Length: 306
Image (cartoon, rainbow, N blue to C red; front, side, top):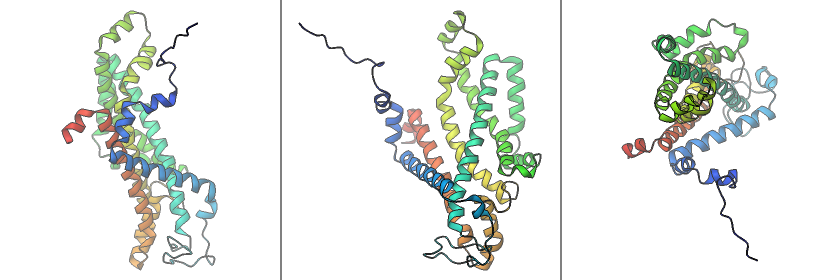
């Protein structure tokens, strides 16, 4: 009695096998720049999670005069030295990674959702909706991003801390996503299968969510990754200028501000060096990963650069 051997189908393949054979992941992992960026980001996430569950935020924020020496240079006891308030800089810098990734993630998620909603609605309904939405986006884009964020952040109460920076930057980044999503959605809506799906009676929400949005994920993913690094550095910039973190918070921007204002002139270079180093590495990681994802999703750009 012979038994027929059945060839495995796409449905039978495991999720791991699908990931392993993904052309996008193969291209991404073969890009050295993207791998370097991904490694840096993974390291920062590990550091952030470690700091979140290891250090007590209250102990990091509180001043401990008499416990640690003030403005102690980096040593085996204080790896990153101490600041002018006798606080150990090492745990503050590590906890700053948690702050940066937490509020950066919130900014990117909020602006992505709003941008997707605005861009898809403008592309799908067109005419009046397109003009109203996109002209509103153009007004926001006409202002320098940091100046607009500074103007918006003053609207929110200081008690919100870094969340007011998140709210301001969300409004600043939304037009960028709206433009990207609108352009991608217009190309998708020109395909014949969209007309066929509409003729079969698909409702507008189903058409947008099941057919238009999935085909716009590539540019959205790249834009989100690049904006992730930009959000982190803008949050640090607002904190540096005094419009983000509350005094004492282990924000890289706040630490840079305190180090430049008090540390550099007294020779305590480590006060601002280590927060600036971690900030630069984090932003570099997201920029490298974003460039690698763009090349993996658009081979024509990679061939042009080569």
